Length: 278
Length: 272
Ligand SMILES: Nc1ncnc2c1ncn2[C@@H]1O[C@H](COP(=O)(O)OP(=O)(O)OP(=O)(O)O)[C@@H](O)[C@H]1O
Ligand SMILES: [Mg+2]
Image (tube, rainbow over all chains, first blue to last red; front, side, top):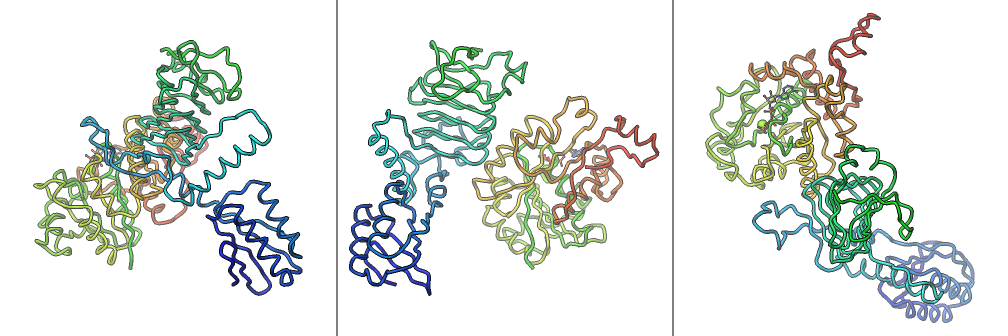
């Protein structure tokens, strides 16, 4: 194994891999790689190469730059990039069980609440850098292209049924790829999107953002909140379950009350919403 | 030998945990396994009564944990000719008399000797629940097709998952096929879609269950009874046999009448 600090070259028989330090800044990696290859150009005159990017997230142009450094400074051909995206779901999506601190005596079952860490849900430096670099690369690409400043946020993904008694407060958007069952509570400072049936209690824009929305494939939940407004399903929605089962729904605040309409895109104009005022 | 320790739990009381424990335990023993059932409902013991072993109790779970007696002294052999034993709960103590670690230790000891260790869990989510679930590697949740029982089951699934007991299985007990047919009771699909876990058995409401409990002979001994047959199939599924779930049919439903007409052997509630 040859070592140049941030770039390791591992040769196993006829296979060769370049392994790049996950934590080194991109410019350093690029520089090191160029140095190494120009010094040893004779060694790498021919062959295919795989690059292991590890847990870092590189923008497409960064990948292209690495490829071009290698191909212009040696006779090698980059055939494959290798990522280790596991860090994204194990690290970032971890829900930590810990005793609640604000639960009064009315909540004796504090031990089983699911509470997120106060800060952004980062459990390791590695996963933090992965998420941050995605966001940064997306943002910088936008700026470069002079694109309209879209909102790009760190959403929390929940990939299993959110059940009765489970509570969550996240300082951003929350996406649930399952049902939110009755008795479950989710508070998000941003939007809440449920790829399933939303039957529990949710509060979008929990820190006071009335522009937040709730989107769900099914929205049978009888009560939910956006910003400071409370939505209460009209009695007819209970009587006619079909009304709530007609495709994805969006709940939003309009003229100081919550309305629900069939979902037609995050920024569509919603004119014909059903007022959720009981 | 390393046996499997399975907790039978529900959240809501009275849905059939003890009935299920007695019947699945007996069913597994009928299939030739060495089985021990442990009643952890300290202060409200029932399992001994349902199994007809009440009169034989000398020592109990708390005695074992406190070291008053040896593990083997508290194990009461079943009346029938099976390798089935009961460790009864103490009646005069409370749930705080034992800790989760102590029960885990005891079950680890039992796993060396038995194929199955079944734990009858008390209702609720307090100390008794924590004791019972800490000792198990697998869980079976019992519910009835009622909204309140299902809410509690949902809560229990969340708690089990957060304590590392993943993929619990579900028994839906006391289903009344006639009410389901009329649309007055939730059916398997309704319950399944809400709880999103695997159903391992459907047990019809069957008065034979109550008669059997009063006699101290679990209904599974009567394999021809609707609930007895259902529990034997559940025991087989627990044991790894692949028996598909079938719809329960109403006693006087169209289908059984139709079967009667064409001369098929249509017994009421014939499967589950
Ligand atoms: N399938 C059934 N059909 C008819 N009766 C049933 C059925 N299953 C259980 N029962 C009856 O329901 C009652 C409660 O059952 P059981 O004692 O097993 O519930 P449990 O969940 O253990 O209750 P607890 O929470 O008090 O421990 C008993 O009288 C039992 O005989
Ligand atoms: Mg019981």
